[in-house]
Image (cartoon, rainbow, N blue to C red; front, side, top):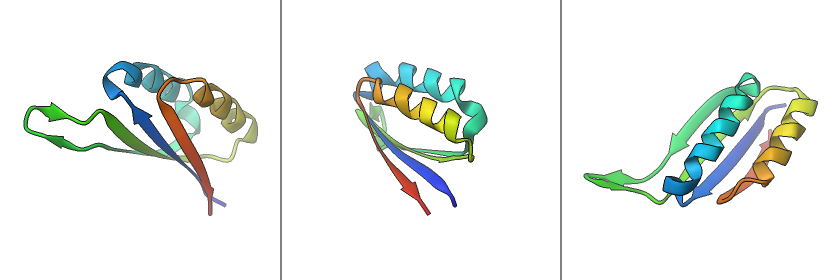
Length: 81
């Protein structure tokens, strides 16, 4: 089974540092990370989407979920395939 997190971050300018720190803290359970956001010349989107594929470590994944829920501007869904 594969577990994918879809994370949407609003107000990227103010909220991205906390999310990045959390992703770094739990980097050992992240197999794949894809970041998406709209951008054009001189303009950066206020929101972004991150897709994460995580390894099978239920304890660490649950710990990551608890921390993720506490972050400002973060919404997420989990897909298990």
